[in-house]
Image (cartoon, rainbow, N blue to C red; front, side, top):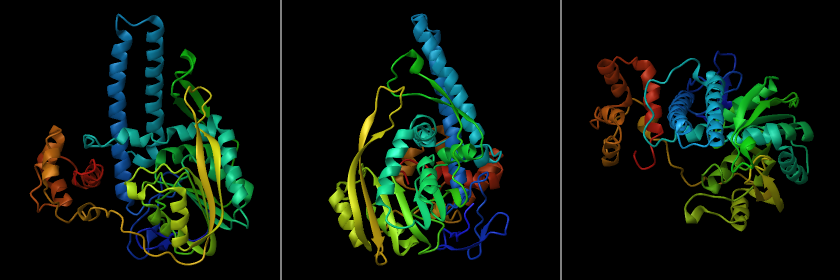
Length: 440
């Protein structure tokens, strides 16, 4: 466990009362319960937890729908024996995957069960396993990939790393290896998605995690499903902490780090690069170093789909001096069982903070009535139209009148349907927070 300062992500890094159980902000009073032994330092920890319980329920329901379809396909009279065996193998592996994911997420759910159905089109199942391939790359077959990326990082380092923050670490192998090889005084390795972090945390405790891999375009019948007994003898050593946290609203005071590492992060977070650069600048001390490595696969508007030359310009405009920069081609998700692989062109740079960054362009703000469930919910035409997509969505939206708040709706659902109002409040926030873009 690291020992340096952490703070409230809602209050610009003001100190947390770490003696409280759970840790609590001394200014706003927000409590930050851990997820198992992972610190959970999201700006709205109750909403974060409700969203992931929501996604777990969506994943479970979607898996069951797929399993029913595949069982019917395997039982079809026209299926070849070899086809039937292949489908049955996938069915068995998916059943195993569902059980293992549910076991991993016990630290998130804390025994809480989802009461509300997922919103149509919310995509919770896809989001939950979005970084599943990272787990196998980091802890099964991808040592060469991790070594190649670590070598790029190591080549940029010109001074001791000091206190290091690693953003968007996924399953964490690169962060662990950097901590072991380059010796920062301490490391905070953070990510938003709990799934790869939960796997990594168990492996660091010496546990075994059993997960099936479903390779892309497998070479043979035997490669359709690859069973992995994930375990690791690698340990990061003292001063290393995995944590659930948002790198763009981090739980760190200003100027509290000597180095920030952003591997495969600046485009994957889907925010304007200027916002990312300003957030990195904020937590670095003057003279501290930003180490970046990764591709430029932005999925934004044309105006923010930057080239590397624009990235250099924006970095310099964000209070940094570029110290080094390079381009490398590295293997990426080169699973030995897959018939599909790619070589990723990655751009790396080291930049020294020389001045505070100007305020970034304003990001899309969280809807005020989700952040504060006592505020009225606007009843809009897109929301009314969305209510026609499912019976449950229509039932919830029928309770809105432009004046009622989430608290009011939760109380009314409790009265009409016998739901426990306190339990349903956070799940309602998660329901609305995960609606498809353009609905709210």
